[in-house]
Length: 605
Image (cartoon, rainbow, N blue to C red):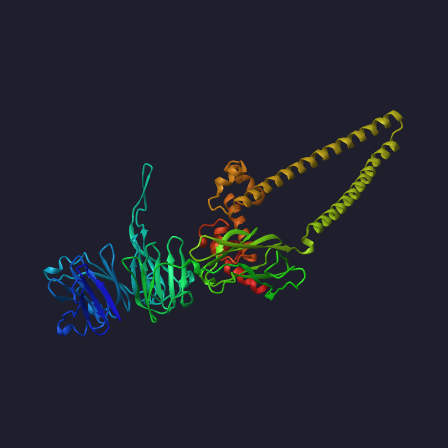
């Protein structure tokens, strides 16, 4: 194993595995390779070299070996111990000096970072450098897992990329850490006080990387990263956050690469070294792209495969069918698809959406070729699948209609029949009741009339008394009708108010910024009047009414959960911007946490 490093003075430094460090003077003829002179006491520590870095700031050579990190001063010819504990760093491999004059060097226990600006003058006695040792997973430093960083690359925009021996590709960035007084407002200008802290994000096979063991990284002329791994070559495009992977079937002579096995030539050519030899890459052959024939390949309903022979579901083979007809009783269905390009299918990515249910596109992870839905509500939907080939702006899209029929008692015709029957029954009952009331009123009216007829001797007096009885009875009926009408109007007003309140929440419950003020404005009422009306009708404050409505919707989503959303997604969907607060509110209202609620409901089913 060899490590090469140029110093800009016509010299090429060669680190070997078992032969120490050698130098090659390029502009001399004939070319000769000379070993770098080492003190006898240091030969053992500098025999197995895994990292070399030329330090222009100090005109020195940083040497990372299997037994420590050393600094060779090219001016004095001395080998230095540059920092305390340098001989305890084992298994050095890969190095890079970034634009901030920090030396990054991988080792068996993570990566060390040396500040080259911190020595204070190495020529005047070799002062110690400041060094950081990042031992654990870079994106989770609190993790007990000890990572091994193997290679580095600094892109043209200053981004540092680090390869891990088993945990993927790291990207170094910065995040703003705010402490103490967080905000200071001066006029219209908003100032945030804090400091920038180092942060890392990781890309793995879940994101499309060929393998999580990264061996080499190099940036090409277009700003893409060429990444050699333990199982193929990956090209990462930062602008689109996508990977394109290559192996032996795409033309590589081998898929297993050596450490730090990627380098870019002065003419832009990429060189990668594998167990099968060295490969030179001068661009991609677009003519080798395979034609895409995106099609649906399989349909499973309740875990049973459905073919065109199954009447009522498909009218043709799934690859030719235009519609899938399901019933509400079907608990689940899964649909598979493929580009039918068995040589290049893995190079692109699929995305899907169910129009009428969720109109946003969802990108599938590499290798996934199917989508599953459970308990889809009755209705008509359109399922769409899109495929984007590697490094192509073209998208291939196919679609199929999905009709879910309801139970017969939920169908429109059944609802109309039941509604008409109930209306007829109520009308008959109303007529019967009115007839009975009329009879009762007539009987009640005849009682005083008969009494007046029995007691009166004068016909004129009798007629006057009967007329008075009839007038009093008519006055009583009018008073009763006015009372009933007033109650009816009040009932209609209450119903209209609650319908408006419910409709307003239905329209805005997903908006986390929709609060009491926004609710009152949407209802066209003052906050105090709205609170008074809601308390009178529901016994709740305005805030409680808004929160309870959202919790009711959340409970329904948890029970149905057609899109397989997790609890955090459901919290955001119903207008909570804090999942922990959502869990507390849900537990307080229903007596159990959302997760427990779902588990118990599932166990009952």
